[in-house]
Length: 205
Image (cartoon, rainbow, N blue to C red; front, side):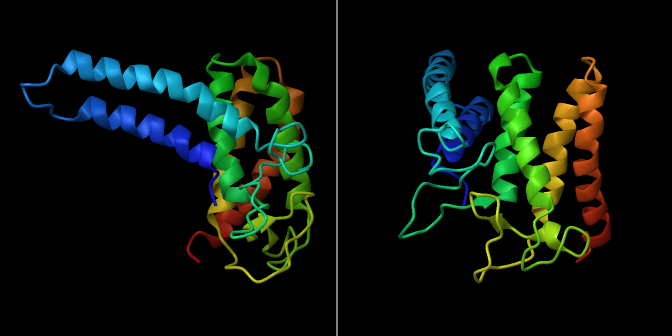
């Protein structure tokens, strides 16, 4: 389940993009409408960003005790219980965070990015109900927030996670390669390769 903060952030982006593309009746001042939407997005974006970062361990205000770099789906533990980390959702969160960092919009995000990548590298190696790292385990959709396997019933495997994780990490690696970070990039490539090999083997499943 995607966190409320992520939904709010994406909602702001979609609303701004949609409003900009709409054919507005002649009776409405388009400049005023654009200004109103832009003003709302400017106000909303930092609120949504703060809410998103609050759901990331180990220092997020609502991280539920998650390990370093782990993105929780929700701090809720009942009705529903979503205090887990989803590969798909955390990868979407960090796609946006990495884009913010690599574009120069927020230079403070690098340590968090490194923590997330290290966490995902550990999670890749966790044996789970979908298998091991070499036998289908990369398709496991969610894990406990301490990076251990979730062994309860769930719809598995879910094959979008590895692809989205690779896409997000590739964005950061490209930045590293342009900024004297080849050693760090080489380590991250081992995680990316695992995911890409999984996608290549299972894309038609």
